[in-house]
Length: 467
Image (tube, rainbow, N blue to C red; front, side, top):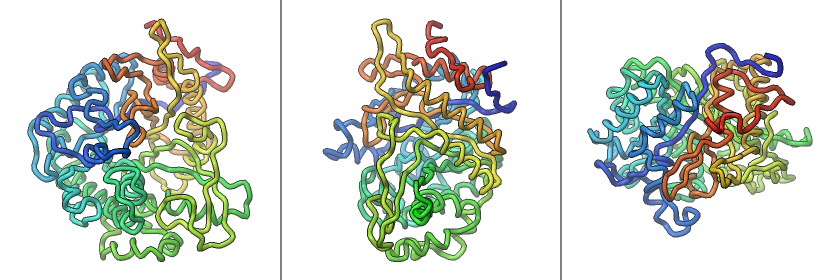
């Protein structure tokens, strides 16, 4: 139809969530504490003293949420399983926890919704943290055991498996600058934890493959580095190495980049963690790569290449991060759709592996009006612009197979608590009432048509709001 940009036939549409952000019921049916339960109890760790103890009460309301997915016509749902719900001590299966995901998967399939299962979205069992957590090398084995347990139970119905979600955040924010659980502030330790994340990914991928899984991935969060002056190319290189290539290159079988290893040598954190054979394990072949994208990062070089960066990523020196440019989201992230196009084209050429945008979305100051409607025009515009960016990447030759919006529901946003709202669906956390936002109806229309309005031809934001 004139005015639309059509996506390839079979393009995967859907929405995503994470267990700790929506499930609640953190002490029910045998679930053990996670590092986020413990971290959130530390005064000042999470804004407003919030936690995921109730969140969206998805554990009790999962059928209602699956009904929402069906109402929106979402063909796909990406969710994560909670390691402490399935294995409260990190090692021993909990039948009640596994049974919950049995029910969830069956409910999805009953509505012809394809499940995409992520095994780890940051909620490590506290029992394993007390044994060293991601700093302990044995965690790779523990994670592989967990992966095998989940696949044995759900692999007859779940086709698509993701090992880790954003190991960058789990390792660098959790063990480097301490703004995420478990709150460790040690850049050298963060590098060791990052290597063990990747080793765990490789061992879990091997376990899944041995169990018959045929659609394996990892979800990595990318932030393209932008510099106004070509002379700042080394700042771009340094940031890209730590933020992006640290995790991407090893899973592609290229090992840790030589320039990265040189940049980080002064910390002496990565090299001691690597043992013979590790890089071969990490390089277990993948069937697709999940691309999580939210914003670029603007950088500039420093005159002294050994001067510490203002960026808290471990080992960064010789460059600084500049303020983002408007328009910004509530979380202060720059809206720059063109960088998503460039990223997808680059990744497709660099990896030669199919890509799925596994997370993309934005937080804005949503308001429920007197009529009970959420007219989130900013989010409608954000999705339209970023979907056009994905379409442009495909037109340029990028092998992008799908797009999963973050997030289905407003939820617990980690250290930000319940302030930022990313959902296609508004959640009143006091009473748990769900309201599909205008952006939810817009995204549903795009998925149904397999096409996004071309620039200058927007879908009316409230087009389906009365349904």
